[in-house]
Image (cartoon, rainbow, N blue to C red):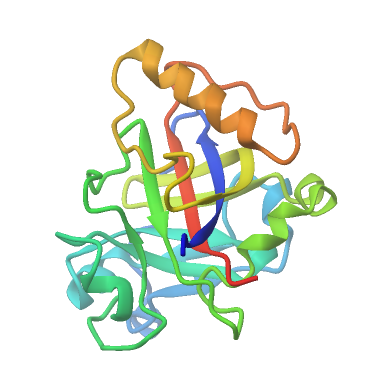
Amino acid sequence: QAEDREEEAGEETEEEPEEGSGENTEEEEELVFTEKDEDNLFTRRKPPITVNWKSLKKINKDIVGWLYIGSLDISYPVVHGSDDEYYLHRTFDRVELFAGSIFLDYQNRGDFSDLNTVVYGHNMKDDSMFGHLSKFLDEDFYKKHPSFTLILPDGYYPCEIISVFKTTTYGFAYNRTHPGTVEEYMQFVRDCQAQSMYDTGVTVTENDNIVTLSTCDYS
């Protein structure tokens, strides 16, 4: 039986990334990140967390980013392995756990420079990991929260959501990490938008990259 999946794809903005965080104070040294405030992320240009990359890299050199979606209680490190199996049921610090990690498709580069970077996470029944991702299927929810933030070692990137849809393992190939020529890439973008349950009105150009968030649907 085909496994249903839900996808939310976000266009990275063309703005230059803001400067990343510096060294933490001595009392914060053991913290991976610190909450700054409770403001709505989507009305701000800067995410309300500070990531300590030095501490993260000591934990695991496979950590390549941090995904923050405040409206979904999603705030996790993103790892990049040599296959799509290792982190499926291992945490970002390599501990075996069914919930696994938020991880990149192994075919992607770890710096998010591909035209389509695919990020996977389990749809956990306790709402952890990508357990809340399906909320974006509701257009009213999307209108209140039309973006998310990707935090990388060189800064942070606000991402606008361009498409939200369900598909199957053997349906639309949303996880093409290298869609080909410019023309093929733009056709891929149009195909993604055509699949969407509603029109987000976001324009994507050939100079934009896509980040695709993918999880399973158990309904």
